[in-house]
Amino acid sequence: MQHLKHCQGLAQVFLIRSQSSRLSKSIIPSLSVWDGNISSRWRSTGGHGRQKYFNDRLPKFRFALAGLLAGSGAVLAYKLQQGKVQWAATSAELPVAETSTPPIYTLEEVTKHRSLDNGVWVTYKGDVYDITEFVAIHPGGDKILLAAGGALEPYWALYAVHQQEHVLEILSKYKIGVLNPESYKKQESANPSDPYSAEPTRHPALQINSLKPFNAEPPASILSDNYITPSVIFFKRNHLPVPRLDPKTYKLEIEGLPDGVVSLSLSELKSRFPKHTITATLQCAGNRRSEMNQVKQVKGLNWGIGAISNATWSGARLRDVLVYYGFGPEVEAKAKHVQFEGLDRDVTGSAYGASIPLNKAVSEESDVLLAYEMNGEDLPPDHGYPVRVVVPGVVGARNVKWLGKIVVSDEESKSHWQQNDYKGFSPGTDWDTVDFKSAPAIQELPIQSAITHPAEGTSLDLSDKELTVKGYAWSGGGREVVRVDVSIDGGKTWHVAKLRSSDTGQHPVPPPPGRAWAWKLWEIDIPVPHRAQELEIVCKAVDNSYNTQPDTVAPIWNLRGVLSNAWHRVKVKVSV
Image 1: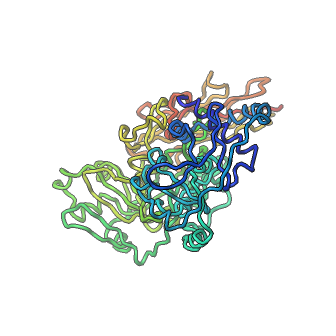
Image 2: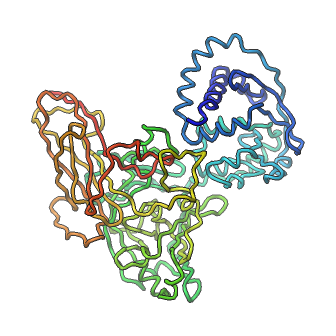
Image 3: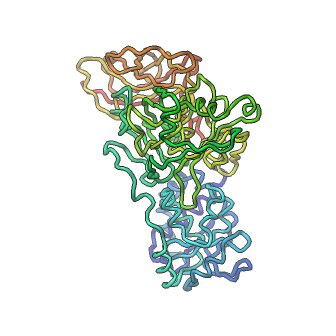
């Protein structure tokens, strides 16, 4: 890694602090170790008259931070383990640094530092931090400035991923003092209540990847039990708190058409436009990210194979709605994109947003819906009640829930999730070199398949000498899965699985070309070789464009862990 040396120093800092808890008390500056050098002092910095604990090697520390955020946790873990021996050998020789009580600030003093010019100060649990120099390398961009001059807690309540040990360690290096007791009490009483306190009830079978916001997937063992995934176990992918919306007062705004802004109620959406129903699979861009984490740590939720599900969706065609309100050749000649904005918002009022190409939005063959039903019932709260966009064949991130606004535009959505997330990069791109503007936003997803039965590590009693393997397969863009190959010897020999596109006993009509929006479930019984003790089960799918999956993860690894579609592998033990 480019900044391995600095990560090693960072690991030593954390090691010393974990081995000697008395050094981490808020009234004592932390020891800093860089390449064996020790410094510990409060010193005046900048022109703001503040006292800050500074390391003599802070510029290099900034790069170490970027490396840490880019996924160098593996290096850190290695150095922590290695450092245990170093600590035992050197702790007796470490000099005792002089300490002093950190400065005490009032809330009024903190609020004066709300810009890069005056310094960016924030507070967290009564401590004060000067994060001015961190703003430029914050993975979330300049959104961090929303907390400038105030508390981090309201913002971290929305993005609970921040409340991890390594993030708190990073923050600790920017500590400059503490709030006085009066200010801390005032700030605590002013903090808003938990924005996630009114979340809907979820099914206990779901495997939770994040509570706030809520993100969860069904267990692999039940994922392929039903061709149509029950709504309660359909994977949940939320970026912000679930909004509570009244269907009686709900309004959908449409901009960018000749007659100006249009406001549409739920009852008008249902009564003015024909109801259209499709069966479509939605998949998160991060599905199977956990396999990329096994190659090298990435940034994102650690999804298994369950961030994908299949449902029937009913609602008005987006095309019908746009044409009704004036979309035609004149608009089509100027516009290139259709933007969607949700009614899920953070504490600053910023909403989740995304966009799709105009031709996808208005094509008669694209089946893009303004959906108000899922599996024959009203949309559940977690899935966008009362109205969401369903863009079949396209990554889940563009299927905006709790839809509040549609904009026909010559530009893509300016949303963070369209511009600075959900994009793929080379395995050689890291967080120091990534340029999000250089890559297109993910739209159609690549061919995908996974094994749902048996589970990894299972011990199988194969007295009948056959192994039953089950799974799912799907391809983006309406491309139909035409074959799934399965191996039980790591890919040396292959067998063709039986595909099904309905629940048992049903006989579905084949989808029109280019409109295979739903997954295929597959199953196969394979004879087990005599005296086999361990089997490596592998699956790979092929679509009607003859796209197939790469055999390993490493060549498609990327720093956000998206588009993970290598051959899925499961190892099982055999007992006779």
